[in-house]
Image (cartoon, rainbow, N blue to C red):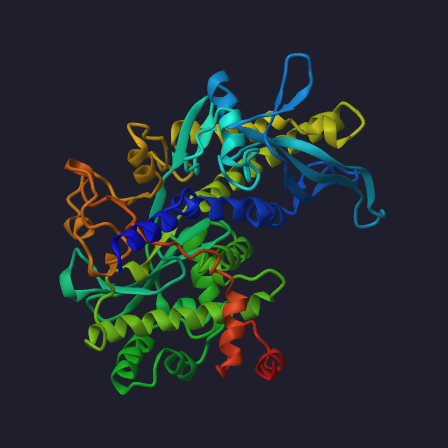
Length: 522
């Protein structure tokens, strides 16, 4: 290839749209689908109105949400289009109004439901990424950009908050909903652990299946102090017979022998006994009815939440959870028998990257919850004072706005993370491009973490081997390789399941045999 051809190829590849494309795609996806998904999850805002006798319950139903392009309200009350350069010069936030359909509904079991008020109201302002689809300069020619004071070569991909340019750092994270088997670092090879970060709707629960020194399996998960026997837990989930439990873990004679040891040591034999045992652990000292209720709530809510599907019976979900735990137990035994190697946490197949859209979705979820609490309070206060209940009087738009802008302005994100948003490095043009393609690890800078800081073979072609800072951040702050592209929106499980079904894979949960046949015919 000629030198001129190489130059032309690299110039076309490294165009301004390409370098920050992962930020744009992710953020545009958040505006198109992510925001609506979060609102659909929330569905309604419950209130305490109706708790008293002779009082009808009232709640708010949430509908479609949409964002327009950035606007600024002037002193005379008029609204004008806002451009990034104007936001920088006036030290204001480059954000756009967010509108949501809300309906106040009144009625109960005896009375027919009545809609008191329904309207699309402004719920707050969303910071808009410069260069995204909702940005006012999207699609402008170079001459038009120069005319409004923008640099045609500026790559975009950042936000403007109170006049400051802030970029959201791409964050590394361990892959959720994936079983990782490893040895417990405190005890060497004596204790085998299978763990999974079960994630659903922003809630993340670490579930551990541990094989202790006596060879017995124990499970740890949130809201249960200490660990609970594996056999007790799977029996509580609906796998009662010894044969069924062993069969679900493995058919291998060596593993069957290990499982029989666990079954011999089991304290409970039936599902009722298992739930009672769990109830005593999660609500000790309480009445028996409360213990049973709490035990059922804990295993439905906190144990492997990613397997919970809306509209699916609890019994079906629980059986799926028990099968998943059996798979984790098998991973522990395979590790003990040297049938598999310990999973490498630094392998890039075991990692996922959170880009701007994912980070904004987490932020919007907490902001919406804060808005919901405020709407609940305003509704109850208006009802107590016998005022007319209307959407516009109970929604305060500054609540959502403040919860969206403050974390981007400070970098202190939800979940206790800091440094997520940073001031754009404007030292030179290459500094800007480097900053937009930087990624950070959540690990502490004060700890050695030698293996995490090392170059890993799976980073080849994905992560730049040389661009990393000196000092405590070395190896934890990295940069994308030049020609690296980030795949997105590959988390549609049903699409993947259908694809597998069409290839003849049977027994996929959530896909019926009729659907399999249809997709195979297609």
